[in-house]
Length: 408
Ligand SMILES: [Zn+2]
Image (cartoon, rainbow, N blue to C red; front, side):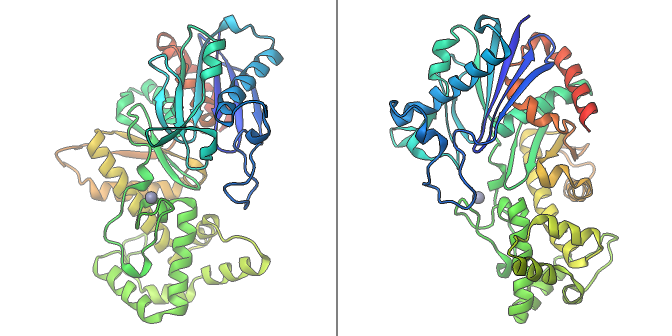
């Protein structure tokens, strides 16, 4: 039998997957909970990572590719698989790819959570080599790297193709701690850093990337809780500015409930449970998260609805713009926030429909936004889909369909 190997080489956890070459059936999986770049929660960015202790004799910039090759070799040994039976390796990376290995060269990348010391600096840019050792050990087979969101987007496009949707017309958007995107069109992974206009200055937020008003600052998991805290803070500490924000939102027609009826933001804030939730979490020493905002909305809290309706609108603006640029038909939404809240995905769809009015010239059919159909198979098939042989695409699609059906 012939095989392909998928490696998830993300910021904290690592995983290896072994699949049948012809069908994509997953035969074996191994997870490393504290991967090469793992950092203890709340520890500083420069704190030691497992890679700092790995093969101390090796120069620090050569440890990532040695580690990754060791991971794959150990995995194959445990499975009793010969190297010569592996036909391709796909590697999913949390970061920006500078070279993806499709030209037979090394895979080079750098991630926001990857310490620079593990990379090499050339002409001002630091990148980590993920594959030098692996390419020596597996000569002559494709070893391909991809940004993690792009990988999932490619896997998703294989499924969409079975429904008759052209892979290049599909896009994957993940809403979790941050926001990322991707798919067969590989140039939109940093979609979370598109800037939102029309934000009232009293609630404006700065993104982790340093830019004011990125989508991610409001509509990622972290963003939603920060945005809610900002509005509650304004309501409690600065009634004058809160009133200014409320009147602005009313003027531009954004103070409407889910049935399109106008409401009063101050009254919604008086009745809201959010302030109480924030206090209680603080008292218990726990973090107030996006989950709390969703919980309040599902209990019919109007302020929570306003907050999430705002972040859904912002997300829809970015999706609509991306769809116009890339001629998209279908957007699948994943990540903890996206995949667990189909109602929220519906709210995003409503705004996309409002923006891309029927009969518009670029996308007359509009864009369908839905929960990513991969379900839990998203994690498994991301890296593997890079190693998928084109000639077995149809068989892989069938196997993947089955995998999502089983797990959902
Ligand atoms: Zn940003």
